[in-house]
Length: 249
Image (cartoon, rainbow, N blue to C red):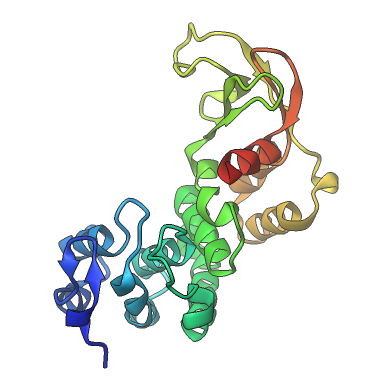
C-alpha cells in the first residue's frame, strides 16, 4: 500500500490524492481531474506522488471505455514524458515498466476506436501520448502542434522566428505573429514531403493516421516532416529538424 502521507505533490503532502482519484470519472471536465492535473503535473513539473499515481491512473484507464479513458491516459503520458522531476528519481520506464506497457495497449485501443472519426485534435493528443509512453523524445511532448496547426521555430540560418502554419489559415511560413489576419505580412509556401520519401517515425505516423481514417492528420504530417522557407532570409529548412533543434536547446 502506498503511504501517501510520505509523498508530496505541487502543493505539499499527497494525502488528498487517493480521494481525488476515487472521484475522477469519465467526465474529462470533472473537478477531480483538474485537481489531479494541478497537483501531479503542475506546468509540466512532476513529483514523487506523480509516479506513485501511475498504477492508479492505469487502473482508471483500464476501467473506462476506449472513448472515456483519454484524460487518465493524457495525464499519465504527461507524467511519464516530463523531464522536470525530482533529482535522483528513477526514470518511469524503469520504475513503472509494467504500467507503461499496459498504457501503451490502452492508448492504442483508444486510437483505433471509431469514435475518433472527425476528432483529429483528440487523435493527435492520444498519438502524442503513445509516443510519450514509448519514450520517443521530442514528439512525445511536441506533437500536439500538429493539431494546433502551427509550430514556431527559429530559422537555422538567421535565427528569425518563423511560424510554420498549416490548416485553417493556409500552408505557409511567416514571421508575422498575426498571420490569421488578411493583411498579414510576407508568406512563403510550405514544401510538403512526398509520402514516398517519409522514413522512420514520419512514415510510421503517416501510415497509422491513414489506417485510422485520419486523413487530415496524415496530410498535415507531410508538412511537419517537409520543408519551409524562412520568411526573413529565404533559406529552405526542414521543419521537423527545426522543431527538434528548438526542443534540444
